[in-house]
Image (cartoon, rainbow, N blue to C red; front, side):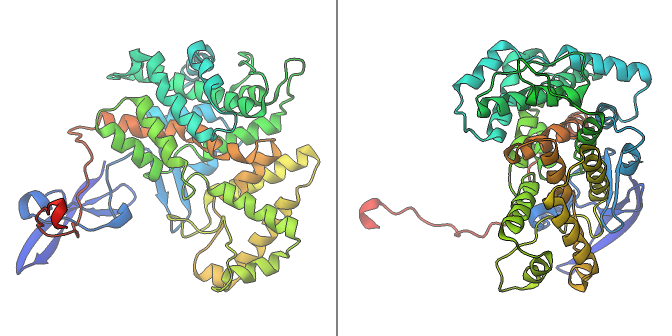
Amino acid sequence: MSDLSDSAKLLIDGKTIDLNVYTGVEGERSIDVTSLFKDHGLTTYDPSLGNTAICRSSITYIDGERGVLRYRGIPIEQFDRPKPNYIEVAWALIFGRLPDDEELSQFREMLTRHELLHEGLSNQFMALPVDAPPMAILSAMISMMACYHKEFLLLEDEKSLMGAAARLISKIRTIAAFTHRRAMGLPFIYPDPSLRYCANFLHMMFSLPYKQFDVSEEMEDALNLVFILHADHEQNCSASAVRVVCSAQANLFASCSAGVNALWGPLHGGANVKVMEMLEAIYRGGYRPEDCIAAAKDKNDSFRLYGFGHRVYRNYDPRAKILKTACDRLFKTLKRNDPLLDIARKLEELALKDPYFVDRKLYPNVDFYSGILLRAMGIPTDMFTVMFAIGRLPGWIAQWKEQHFAEGGKIIRPRQLYVGNPKTDYIEMEKR
């Protein structure tokens, strides 16, 4: 909980307005402007809300200057080893603490029990074009879950929330796998209750009726890690979309579907696709990484270096560091090389030595290595953003819960600065 620790003064039209200043647990300060419009008829102008705290949250903490990311106070690096566990992280994000052994076992059992889709929902895939965008399918299917689980449209206690969360987190991987199988013209592979969360997803993606896909321990750990590192990231575009929809008292399914749609945008969830397209173009064109770095600095060159820099981080993205190490581990286990990984490593090496990038604090972000890791598992590029959504779902649920149960919560309704016509008379058609 943030504390009222100071005050600020706003001088306007010769009048002084006193504003409260709140300080968060890590020392960040926020000026309270909630009374500006009501008491003084003033609004703040902040396009993209880059300087506006829209809520008080205890879920995720980011310090972009120091490259710090914590879930419920726990540094993200501590979820890497000795064994990454996505379901444990999902529980912690949603319920505010690490689960004990019994709670985690019960939640796993719920995920296993609810991994199948209602056959009515499964049949919807047959009505979709085989080349339909995967994120469009994911958004539609999550929204349609409200038709088959109406008992969870009103969530007023932790028990009912757990039931809805378990269904969403479990079924999203089934929806994602069926989406891939539909696009490939392959029969659906149903979940295997004997497999853990990530191994089960890869089984549904790649097994054949006559051949079980072999999921190595290292691959399962790598996918756990990808999901963990994408599980939440404070008030990003999709999390804010979930909160806005939730503030209208919309149900969890509708709100998470909105999160999927926001994530679909190339400026948000589609960034790792851009990185892979860039690396593939460099490889196919036979370009030297040194030439790419030079082109990225040339204002007259159309080449763009994707995967560097971040809206929040002004330091090395801590998620990128973990994924880089995970790439090394997985490729060593697979006993194969990826020329795209070699190019990525060289680009990073050159950029971190170049004053142009260092001075501008353009360091690798999470998208720089995540696509390479997913590619190593056999995930097609058009499914990358879907993988992001699977990982991010617990964060959306946590954000929904916090918004829904917030004391005195109101519908989120930003103001605007009107710059259109002044009062203008209507002109009859024959006189225009």
